[in-house]
Image (cartoon, rainbow, N blue to C red; front, side, top):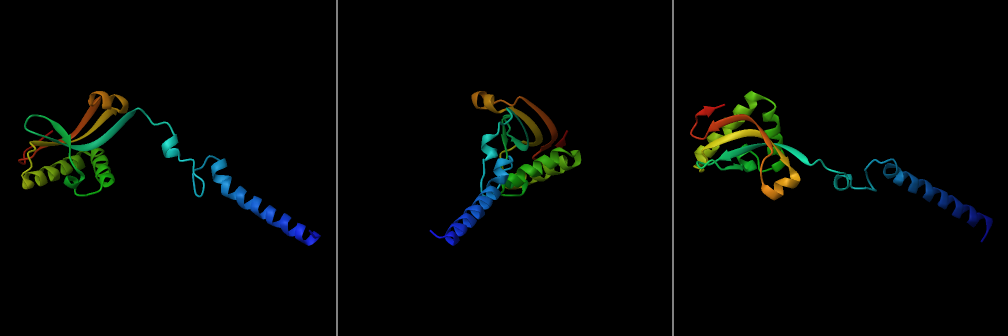
Length: 150
């Protein structure tokens, strides 16, 4: 090996080390990013309590069930969740959303008696054992036939 070949190898080795250091920098500093990821969305601890703003349909027997996103005007779950979350922050918006969903259900002839916009708190572990809501806040309630209640 000649001196020139050794210098080229050292040069490429240094360049490789610098590139490797730059690639690993976000990971080494605790930041998630390309091209290395420590997948914090799966590795981080999650809270045991979940607050969920949603729109619920109540049948004539009083059984409540979450309504599908299409009743909130979108096929997308995340858009429906954001719509419910924003409505829950504003009483007028909650009442408008409630009335709009109730009108759509009435027009479709769905067997739903009333609609509620509410925020419920779940214990995410216990929910799978007993299925109950731990606490809730009612933001708006509408009868599907058009009458409103609060």
